[in-house]
Image (cartoon, rainbow over all chains, first blue to last red; front, side):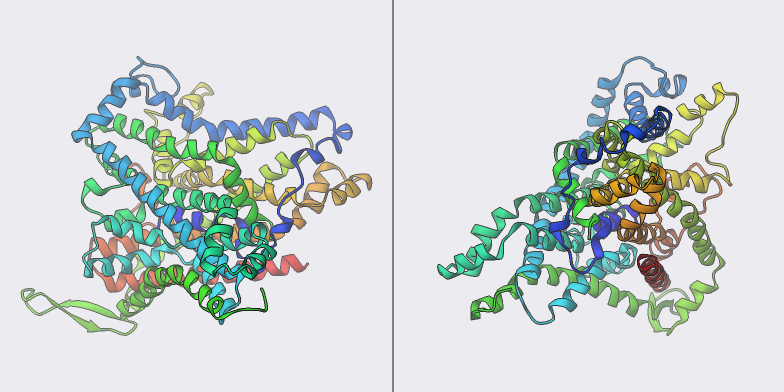
Length: 317
Length: 298
């Protein structure tokens, strides 16, 4: 299985704790501790700590920086000027070639990835939100047992279900359709966990009680009161699902054989399979990889608050 | 929650959880059941090889067949070695980074968190491709860098490839886990830390003896998810395989399952193999949780 997607589903570490307590979520501001022992700290140990941190940042940022450099070179400069040496600046002609190759199939892949990720994540976040909210705010038979099943679902290796899912999909004629990739993505047990934690934190029971007294129906309560209050939770779960779908590779690999339905990861994988025979594909793979990283990088930078709160909700039991 | 549950309120929760559980049954429970069913049968071609094939019940035959296949057993050995390298590297590295960033000595904490988290925006498959290119001597800045020091390193050689694989995966996940640990560290009560410092504990002692024990549950759970992800290893060896001669097409259990199902169309063996992988995952989760709980109580 693409190791990615289980782990994305399972995301934050505290996830399986039984009784989530959003109230203890990290509230202490980052600055509170800074001054603390700073006076006792020698200059040299401070320098040592920051040196290690800088080296690690070089390690995490180097590959993407290299990708950016490599995307500016044409195929021969890639090898004539390897690493961080600059060749002629060909970024735009590379992009032009990327988007025109094979009648613009790359744009189709990007569109497919968007479809799988945006539509899939929005639907999955909504479904998770409904379930997590019900687990938090209602009492119903078998509640704890069902919730335990959800938590166990976080740990099921996707490898185990992908193969039978493929055979089931082929029986009902769903193989090689958009549905084959979209439907499995709708189930996000970790999203249900997050939704329950957020529902406890964001939706006060008293508000619902008051509205109930006024005669509002339960559906109405959810739609007009709880849903707006849980908007940040929706964004967080959406972001986690979006990442999971955008990164997904194994499921489309199993389910799809028509390249016009590929997501961008599977498309680039297929190009990469041919580089040893046709080295001119190196440049397509490199520029394509760069473009495929941009949407998520923007989402992460722009929506920092949301992934941070998702990871935090999981981190502190 | 409330005691005054009217009739409408009783059916509401069922309505709210129904979409999730219907889908959960369809894409989780039924496939697992189907895998168990499939693992008990195999396709046999009838006699002369004409006339197609028919399905016969073999009981545990597929399980013994897979276990009798040295390629399958080796795949588990490979992934065990991988876990030995990857899990300590991942969890230890993320923990060390989180403690360093959390320490009062670190500057630009927000920048470092972002820098470490950014690789997580790269799809696993793309990350594997980027690293394979970085390991390829004719493209790599690393090989060049080493050359200026007069040394070299064969990232794709038989001994090194396991580490190269673990590095590609760790690169993608270290910042993610680091942010989780960092968030947990932020919830450690400030008074406790001040008390430790007043008592004369240095920064290192405070980190190891005070902070670390207080985020034990995050550590255990991260280890759990890291392990469950690691045993499903597929993408990295699949991509590295093109350049690393020592990686066979069935190098990891998931690669074995993929080949059994989609090259050999032996669905019975593939199903049996994936269920054994699931059992391994369950065992591993059990052991980690068990030791984790003991550690938490210690």
